[in-house]
Length: 482
Image 1 (cartoon, rainbow, N blue to C red):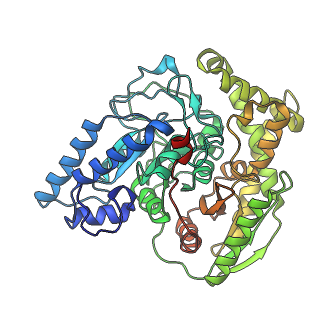
Image 2: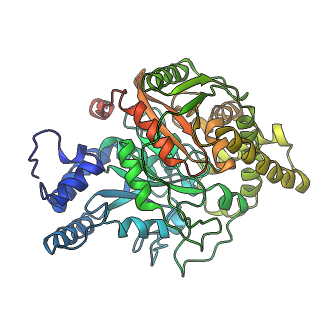
Image 3: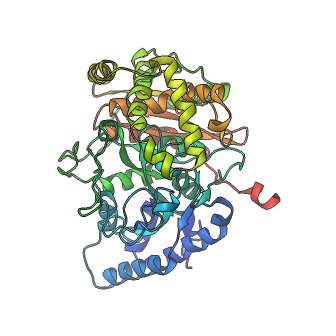
C-alpha cells in the first residue's frame, strides 16, 4: 500500500480523498482495495459487521478501475471507493438472505436499482453487511450470520437494522455503506457507532428490486416508509453516496424523476425539539443537543427551542401502520424467523396495543393514513425552505445489547425513546444522524429533519456540527482485552 502524503492510512481517508487520489494517480484503486481488505481482516473478526466477503471480486473491480484510468476513459464519481451493501438488498451473485438460514441460497441474478447505481458510479463493492432477520430490530444478529458488535462497546447495540453497515464504517472497513430505513435503520445504527447516516426523501432513491426477482406485494407501509440511504464516516462521504444512489425510477411506486439540489445554503433557522411527549431525553442526549445548538449558533444559524407535538403523533401512527401490516406477515416470520425476532415483535405488538388496542379496526387504520397526510402538510408548512428541526436521534444512549428481549416494560421504554426514529418514516421527510462526540464511552449525536428534497440544507447544517466535533475512531479495546 502506498501512502504518498504521509498523513493517514488509506483506510482512514474519506470517499472524496480516495476518489481524488485515484483520479490523480497518487495511489491506485487496487492499492485502496488492498488497504481496506487489510482493515477488514484486522477488525471484522471482532465485529462480524461484513458477512459475505469475496476479496478476489473486490480486487477485480479495482483492477478494472485502474484499467479505465489508464485508458483515459470518462471516470465515474465513486471510482475505486469501497462500499458495502446490505444482506436484504439484491446484489448480483450474492444471496438476499435477510439473515434467514432458509434463504441462504437465494442468490440474486441482478442488482437492485440502488446497487446498480452504486456499481455504475464506480464503487468497489466490498462485502455484505449484517442485519437482524427480516430487518425488524434495532439490534443486529441472526441465526445465519451471528451477532454484530458495537465497535465502541460490545455490551451495547451497534443499532439495527443496518448495524453491520454502521459498525463497518466506524471501524474503517468502508467509507460508505448502503443501508435502508423504515424505522431508524440507517439513522440509529449511525448514532450507535458514531457515523453519519442519511434517510433521503421518499422517492429519491429507488427501492425497486431487479426484474425477474420473485414478486413480492410490498405492504403500504413499506411503500410509503422504507427507503435506501447511505451511511458514511463523514458528511461528505454521505453526500457523495447519496448522489451516487439517487436513481430516478418510475417503476418504483413512489419514485420521482428528481435529484436533490447542490449548492451551499446560507443562514438556516434551526428549531430544537427535545421531547415530543413520548420519551424524556437522557442527560447525555440533552448535552448533545446543547453542544450542537451552540455550534450552530457559532456558525451563524438562528437556533431556538420549540415544541412540535405532531412529531409525537407521527411516532404513534408508526406503531399502528407498520405493526398492523407486520401482523399480516407473521406466518412467514414465524416459519422462517429466529427466536429473537419473534420475541421482539411480540413485545412490540403488546406495547402498541396499549395505544391502539389489541385489534385495531380497519376504520382506525384508514383514519391513520388520512391523518398522516395532514401531518405531512403541517410539517412542510412549518419547515418551509429555510428551517430545519433538530431532535435527539434517540432519547437514550445506545441501548444495551438485546434490550428488546428484556421484557415488555423495557420494550415500551425503547419504543418511547425511539420517537425521533419513528416519526420521520411516517412523514417521508429527509433526516440525517450526525455525531457530536463520545460521552461515557459511547457515541452521541443529533438528528436533523428537513423539508422534502432539502437534503442539501440538512447536509450543510450537519457539516457545521461535524467541523466542530472531535472525531476519533473506535480502538476496539474491549476486543483486545477480552
